[in-house]
Image (cartoon, rainbow, N blue to C red; front, side, top):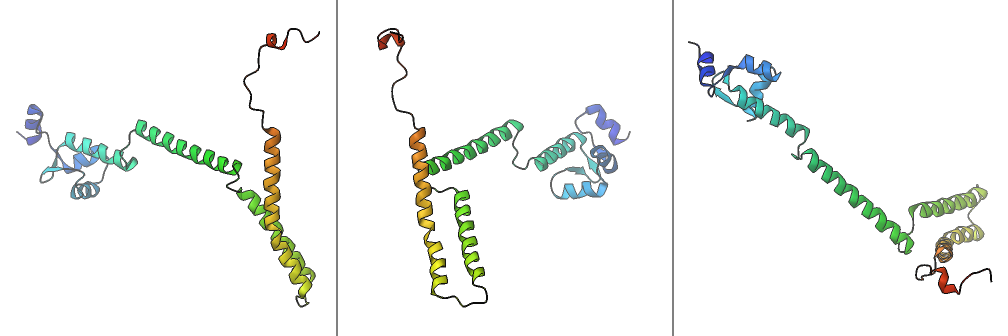
Amino acid sequence: MEPDSESRKGGTDLTWPSDRMARILDLTPRRMNRLVSEGILFREEKGRYSPVKNVVAYIRYLRDRRDPAGLSNEDDDKATRRALNVARHDEIRLNMEVTARTRIPLDLIEEIDERLHSNIAGILKSRRNKTLDEEALSDIFGELRQVGPTLRAWHQQVTAAEAILELPKSTPTQPAEEGGGDESE
């Protein structure tokens, strides 16, 4: 009797030849041997493989390759939600810093920087082929000195706009009865 049929009777010692095992896993025999040498698949004896043990091992290997951290979909969803919450927290914190005027928005800095450079470039172009005299240097440094006042002006505009938008801090609206009755009187 051949080993395969004996193994089938007992059910626990079933082994297959390497070519049959490779076909069931959709691998070449060479790739299967490489996976055995990497410890992913298991050889029971020379040229024989346990199909159950190796199919389970190969599925785990493929799952781990797809998801190296070994996270399930539920864990992956939790990690994604956690990352999203952290990003939202950071965004809220940055917006609060801008509102509290402890941080200047990047778009404002870029706008001021662009204006500054274009103004200085205009000064230099207007003096092309001329030496930079005291007046030109004074104009350039004057532009550089405008950065601080421009930022302060922005700060004052934001503060004024916030003061206008700020609602008075009072208790919720009182019922009409407290006002003394009908307003039409």
